[in-house]
Image 1: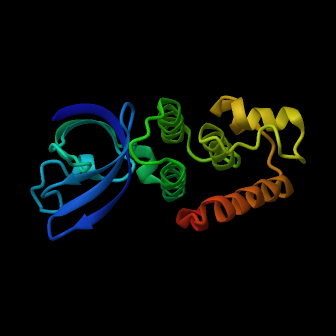
Image 2: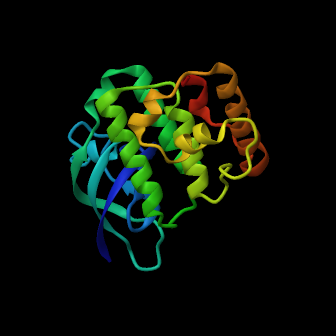
Length: 208
């Protein structure tokens, strides 16, 4: 079966001498583990589509009885060039992708989560990093995954808490920095990911 879908690369890892296993978060088919054959070779035709934090229009082939599609073609829609020029922005983009990856089951479509990730990456590419972006993104991803704190967290003022969950990215950028409040929210995240998922976010050490 051949099918096409828009997707964002969440992560990649090597397979054998020349291939890659690429986690692609697609709009209609959810998170897929995809085999990209030959992309680690110098002349690998689909190499650009297999790079982390890449947005593309993908064509996949799925063999009957398999859950492991192969990428057979596609078109790059965005590589987020400004993000790649700034290490802090790149770390934040990779953190966005890791959060989505950890909160998303395989082959479980979530157009809302896809739109959240794409919108956050486009904003980051245009305007760079800001103090509250990471926390606002994670709160929204948790909400979409069914683990949200919007109605349960105590501490932040209601208007501020609502802004983190529902404000535009431009509004998030205008929020006043507050180190104590940020530490409170970070502690919520730490407890959640440890107690409910049992993982540490590897990218967390590289973002503010």
